Amino acid sequence: MMLIFAGYCLLEGGLWMWVSPVLIFGSLSCVDELFQENDDFEADQPSDLPLFITIVLFILVWLLFLVVVGYSFQNSGGYVPLDLTAFAGLLEPQPVWALLGGVWTIGMLGTAICNIAHEFAHRLTSPVRMFIGQWLLGFALHTSLPIEHIFGHHKNAGFYDDPVSAHRGEGFWMFLVRSFSGTYRNAFAYEKHRLQRQGKSHLSLKNKAFIGYLMQLCLFAIGYALSGAAGVIALTIAAIVSSVILEQFQYISHYGLTRIQGTPMKAYHSWDFSRLGSNSFMFNQTRHSDHHLSARKEYGALDAVDDTVSYPYSPILMLVIVLIPPLFRKITASELERWDREYATDEERAFISGYMNSKTSGISFSDQSSVPDSN
Image (cartoon, rainbow, N blue to C red; front, top):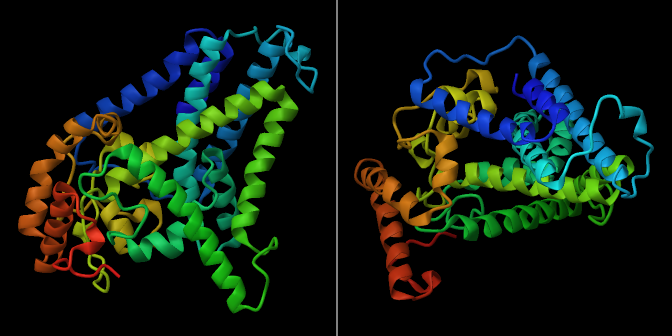
């Protein structure tokens, strides 16, 4: 329904392009607050047909947006490679302020598609689905994520060196840089090591990281073919929006929770924030603790977990709150104190204490000899 409504808003143009993202995010937040426990939501399906239908609808809306951009600039004298005047009876040229609403819409929907991509990336017995998953993450400039996520994050979640586990007190924008760059770096290192073990060169198309880069280039090539430089700019902004929202979800998934290297993953090493609206948007990934305990479970089989910390507000609202660091720290303080008191081991409490002391004293964390070695 979100995708159909988004397509309608793109066709209507003007303020409707801004109505779509505001209404969708607002409605999801309201549903989250009304149905906090999410006991009734079951996404289990006998096949992946709903996921494929969602992908097809998103591609159609994505292409429609490119046509709107191309038609708008073509009629205002801008260069567009393809003649889009055939859409004259359907579309009207849109001003830049309206197109920015469309960019936000595509970026937001791209995040939902990234959740399908994440689901497919975990289908290790299905190369086709894994390929589709990596390709879909190109909409968020994150084709390296499935490599690092599967072979890095699920093994290292909660470790100090895991780029996708937010440290306690770490601001979102610092985390975004560390997470995004660390994901690309770790994915390339993993592929290099994998191919060298097989006696093959990592500087080839057998390197899945390189394949991911080409996937992203293909998406932008399509954008240029339909709407020229304006389409590439629009897709770049939309991809950045998608990537930021995706990283916000990653930020709140493990924020401030620590695991000592060599210890097993427990439910309490992930935040669980299961809500009805966000689950429909994220395909049950708000049931994050169960996902980390059983990474091969399909999204419909994931369960909400009580034996961990949880956010007091809708995950959608938390995405806004993380952009206000003092407010985010204040809201999470009581749950983190409960985590330290009820869940953390002595080693984990010592680790957290040493890390927080290093932040207040200005001493490099690696110099804290009293802290258990994270390596």
